[in-house]
Amino acid sequence: MFVRRIKNNNMATIKFVLYKSNKRKDGSYPVCLRVSKKGKLKYIDLKLSSLEGQWNEDTCRFKNDKRVNPNYELYNGLLSHYNSSGPKRPWQ
Image 1 (spheres, rainbow, N blue to C red):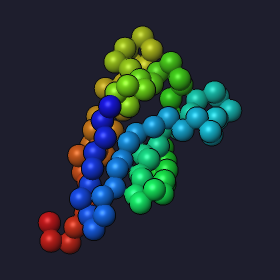
Image 2: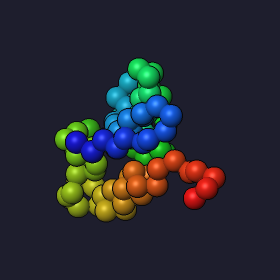
Image 3: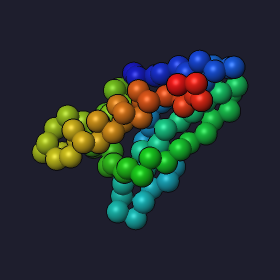
């Protein structure tokens, strides 16, 4: 499971999740960034969607199978970019 901790005044944990509470008309679910800090959760929509069969819960990424999702490399690259960018600080 890929969980990244961001050091700030207080520690926050982020994770990519398939937000199953919000099913779309086409049967897909939005891919969100879940941020938890001090016991509070916030979901940020990443404007990506996935069917349950296209999402790997263990790795929090799209499944690496072109038959299931032909654009998995692009989508996983976007998720890796979001995971590595971290918070923007004025001194960086």
